[in-house]
Image (cartoon, rainbow, N blue to C red; front, side, top):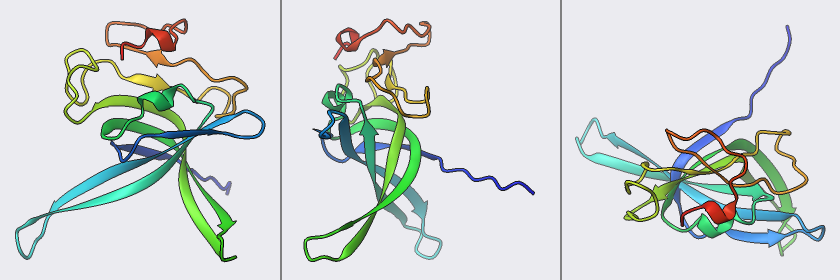
Length: 165
């Protein structure tokens, strides 16, 4: 029997803080941000509604232009894979961190933002996308941001300057 495995993460949540972009010594950009996802349920014993928030660390490579739009509170869709790495802290202890290595990021809007997208609201209008699926997530140059609408086909000629916000 052939062995198969899948490492796929899909998140739909809100950004916990503004994204931070740094550059490696070779010049590649790496953008880090956190995404909060919420879960709500009704307690069977008390009948009260309870809510739980999970925080996810996301890493996005070679997308320095997108970081300007990844601001606290905005709703975002992230697709990628889990990756665990280790490092030694300042006391010499080995620490482990699990992060989502993003392949695709879609900006969907944010809390209380009505002017960023046509129609306003959290998931309405035209999301801004940063695809990574071509080439297995490794690309030599930053891909162009894309803008799609229900009535508009994909146009690879759209650049950062064409984004309305």
